[in-house]
Length: 252
Image 1: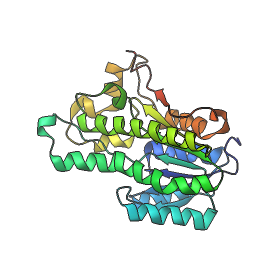
Image 2: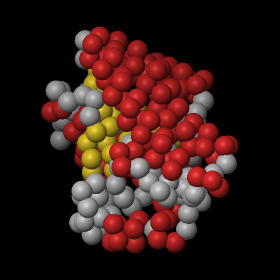
Image 3: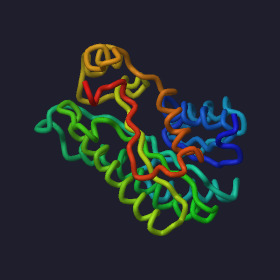
Image 4: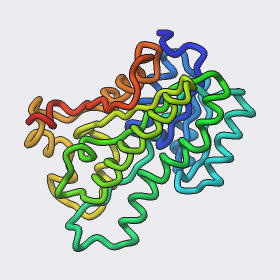
């Protein structure tokens, strides 16, 4: 249980779901984890339940909040080895019914938030001799979605951003790897907060039974195990890629 021994990790959207599972899994593998979220009560409680973990309040859309968070990690831990950009929201519905404000809010959380995280965390990761950035994308960013148009656009942008930064870091020989995990239908609390959809589209189990070849939704821990791999030295020759964890959705 020491695949990440001595590593310092920061995970956004870590109060619940995939982010919480990632934080817990990395802590079990020896990392010291900073959980970051906008839900302060749930985030602090989650951090209290993980040995050695700390909580940081952050709205990922706010550049000043990112600067404060990275400074807090530097002051407390002295370094950062792993950044997991997981915070996200899901807004669905027909594109003609989507407001410009909702479009911008979707991109601000899912894409701008990751951009700001990379921008401000990368210098600290480099200063420590390198590390791993893992962005939580989606299979909708690869195949598209007629139900979640703006969400798919944000995740497609995140995949492209990840590839571009991976190439930049590789050419700089800074020992920073950048990858994505692309989940399929994962049973997390985000389904209860989806906007612009109802019925089976907002029900992970029903959607998975209908669409996923393996016949069931994935769990947050399924994604967390992929993140642990990409964050570890086992993936030292892996950068600029998307690790798809979807129960066969892309091939079904």
